[in-house]
Length: 537
Image 1 (cartoon, rainbow, N blue to C red):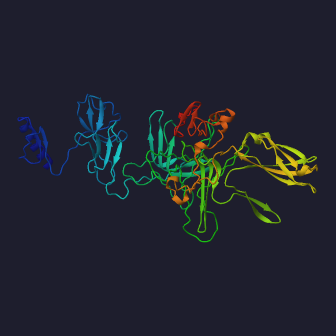
Image 2 (image 1 turned 135 degrees about the vertical axis):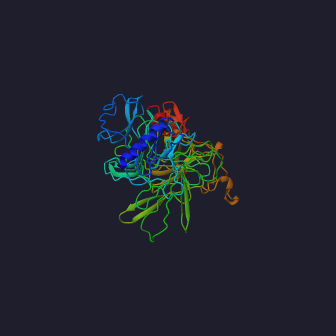
């Protein structure tokens, strides 16, 4: 009876409100519709039940016939999804009302702020997803978080990673991986993964790049390890048209007047712990295995423009003494210049390892030895014609001859008729004895002719000649312009050094000395980081 009374009251209200073009449904007989509504359903403990229909195909109106756009029903079909749907007459399909996912927690909506070019969570401005074409794609600010972003995977499949970045530009594709779990093979050895892994398969890209600029004070790339090698580089050279690629290349461009050494590669060994003499502290250790080709452990080139140029400088300092030596000393025109003696080591079975030391003189001399037969008190000696071509014999630089007469009875032997090509031996007092005579000749070389005696020597390499103490100045200050120096090998024999240098190598001599051969007739001041700059690539 109560339900019937309520229905009658509602019907009466409905009829009454219809005269005013508004409808209110309520359990209260005095309820009025809100002025903004056409239909106002009022209740404090009841809801509205829409017609339950079974919609098996959301793209057809069935089972409703000719529905009006905006018609609402409750779908009971579990395949197409139960819930409230409305009919989209424009696209002729049923559209479900949005509903939150069935999961614990609070629902968070993503919004687009006014005039923004991104969307973000309503309650978190630190996360943004930008529109296509903007500088950022995904943006996150960690604010005061200990870790701004954390990514983790437990997938053990080869190639899995916590984060993969991919720059997908046709012909310039670049991959970056964080927490990479995959096999990486280098030089026949395979490792199982890498914290950071870069991969590039297209031209004009690098796998890893580090840079410091402006107010930065730390190296662009740092590596540290207390278990093995902090930095390891391995390469395969498989292009016979170019010189072998180096495993490591360092290049420094100095464009200011800076003091001291300016190395492209600097190595430093520091023994700061331990005791005793158990090993060797080594600054640079080089090893070359050439198999069936020529081998060099270290090759050094030095190129300069009429300044102090040496191929190498070696120094050894201890608490007792010090020694230094210049090798391939262009400025002083010597292959070796340095302190202390030059010696040979000979390991003998019966006398131990002995030292033989070279004789030294205040000036440069050539020596030659020979034996001649004195016949009836006379002999003539012709100087080797090869030696004649490389020495100077004149009034100011006479030939010097020293004799050892191996004749038991002899009046003595004199050296006469000395010339640029030979000399005569005659027995004194008209003697006519016959026998063997050993001789030594000492002659002035053309090499370094004009240098003089006790010429100025260079100091330790860290001390430039302009800074030499006055007490270190010798009376004979050599002048390079007044000294005879043989022309370089390529000029004597008429060849071009760069014809024998591989593409990618430094040209050691000639008009383009010191430059990198990028191709036939193409040169550069450095080894390029892009091999396309080489002509044969």
